[in-house]
Image 1 (cartoon, rainbow, N blue to C red):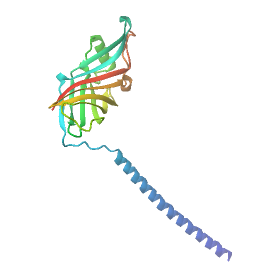
Image 2: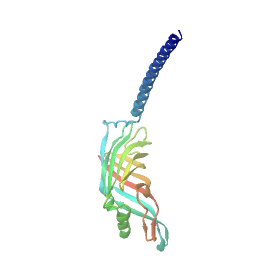
Image 3: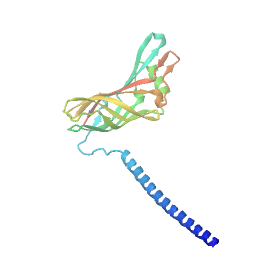
Image 4: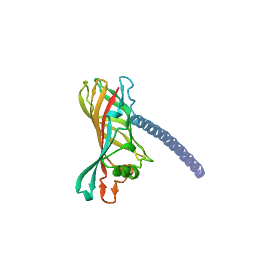
Length: 233
């Protein structure tokens, strides 16, 4: 009788364990499915929104009417110029972008390239030092900017109206790419766009050291980049 009771108890325990295992398996399957569904939904949420292909007009940079420049504070120790800004410019700018200027303005697909080898300031010695030591243009001759999105565009636009907004994108220079924000002011007149885009960057963010020429010409880390541009359809 005692052996029979033990056997019955053992059988009951097995049944309980099997039932528990089945319940756990079912719960695990449901949890996994929910997690996968949540992950899929999250991936869909962060995916890029397609750029509209209708109603966009392509504008191309006009190099002769466009300048890219840098401005950086430079302390010239022996020239008694404590507030000297070194400025270098170039017309070697190429690229294009697309706009829509109707009731829902849009700026998209901006892709610009600047030939850093052609930057010139008021000092050939400075230019040579920057190209050889800071920018290392023999290895990294170009800077590029590819837009990602914009902020602050108006809800509508009229021809000739000056607008201000921000354009966010990836700036690549000296072998490194960083997200940068440019403050833009511009206007469309017929088939021509004119404007200015400005941003502040730091050399060390791009793996570059601020120029220091024998401790007599010392530059700050902060640099203002300006693009005065003209583009035509």
